[in-house]
Image (tube, rainbow, N blue to C red):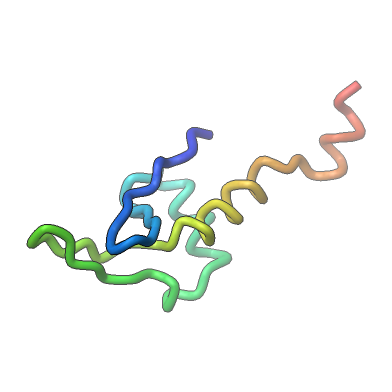
Length: 75
């Protein structure tokens, strides 16, 4: 899975979830309250599906950890 590069807006890092694959969006939304998605105005454009990068990074890392069953089979 490829990690998104954040965009900097007003000194804070953000990602747009629309840049993720459909499966990734589904996975992310399943463990995230809708209130975490923010609407941000940047250079006259409304970005309505933004998530702070720290939250995204935490989710991304949790997706990289194999389950215990998979780890046992990885000899």
